Image (tube, rainbow, N blue to C red; front, side):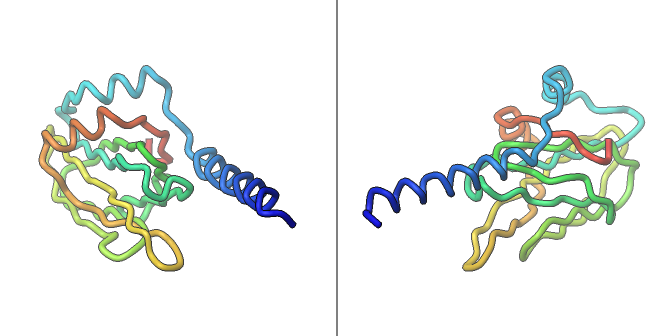
Length: 150
């Protein structure tokens, strides 16, 4: 087998993996995405944005759970938005540092960054609560995805 043939086959495999990872993410309608990016607090609930604003691990979709319920899977440059009652909520993903408890208050917005960490055998993520200005800027650059919690 020639080097050219091997490179060509490898390119096809990588392309399929990237498309498969992206295909498993269901984007929200554009109107929902635009409304979420207005960052208007809900006076009856707290709102949590979980975002992944990087392309590292683009072929990987990362599961996210909120209080033990599967919300869905993030992909590169994507975010979820959840309306949650006030109180403590546990958000989890896969990997070390992948569990975060957020104490929320009604009428406030919270931003959680899902930072992808590449390991030797697989990828994982670290969840971090970030400042409002950091979160808004990052979410504005991402596409909203549909969640099982909405």
